[in-house]
Image (cartoon, rainbow, N blue to C red):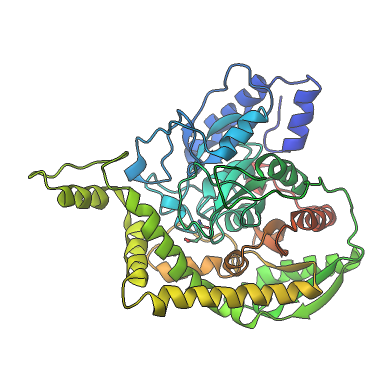
Length: 470
Ligand code: GLN
């Protein structure tokens, strides 16, 4: 019997390598767990049978990642029957590594959201408490890993969609440095921010999956070669310089239980040998979120213009055969409220007469944010903060208030604006729900984040299996 709730990807790989379990048996074990628990959790939008000759362990992919021959919806009705004719580079790399696709996981429509409640296919639920959200937009991937419905998964993180759901579900999630992982074949949201990354139970699993997916891809000209990925082993933090940015750690809205768990983790880092000191990011946290909500919708309005009913996906014919009417009907029927809101915001920010005041200004502020972080990283190897100001909130709690929903990412967005990598690891519980610790580093510092994350993970001893499933 394979205990899919407990087993790490690394342990599963070991079982397959030693010939103790076949890849097909492993795939079947996860399918059994899915059959048992996914009706309640709704992590998956599409399930896939094990391919003949699968060579390794399975993986789940967020349904924004294009998969050849397998429906890819991006959580939207406009792509309800879209079946890509090619694999995204990350999907191809998983195949090349022998990984078998378990299925495609639920997300907020076009990855716009922080709870999966914007999915056109209904929300996913948090395995720790099914009256609560798993976070978003990649809530399906995070809930699946947490509930033993996949050994590991991929997500996408534009403003926090890997880090925040990982925090809320008690997983390890990496948003890699911008440019380290190909987006070729991934449904585009905001192209200057989108990154693909791993969602796992452990930091070592995360490093292993990042090793598989990262590196230059001729099909995505924003990608570069990355330093060789090291699987972390060290259990101390000797010589590591840790910065605590006041604005990230004392931001309005951080729950006391989240603050307490993060402070304990910082104390632990000191005990493990890290040098801890305070620093400031005065403008990054204040302006990060407003700046993101100009740039991301602007880019989204441009990227989503391709869903016009002409080339692929949904099409609603107009009675009189007028082209513009057909496009309007298609987009009205296909897009949900949140993409429509962002298309309007973004089109406004880009329109003549407003461009300089909104989009242009946001780009300048973005440069200021990058410089603030760069200055901090002259003194520090890593910054520690909460990932999310709150633990998992109730389904429905924020759906009527877009601003409250946007604030879920107030701590994950600033480093993303600067293209920086961020790793979220679970650091404890508050009111019985997981708290995420965010580790932020300079560009291409993934190996440092893995090292620090691994040492802390060992010392913290967090049990990733949701209490109600133990
Ligand atoms: N929650 C943020 C948003 O709605 C971030 C989403 C993401 O990273 N894809 O835009």
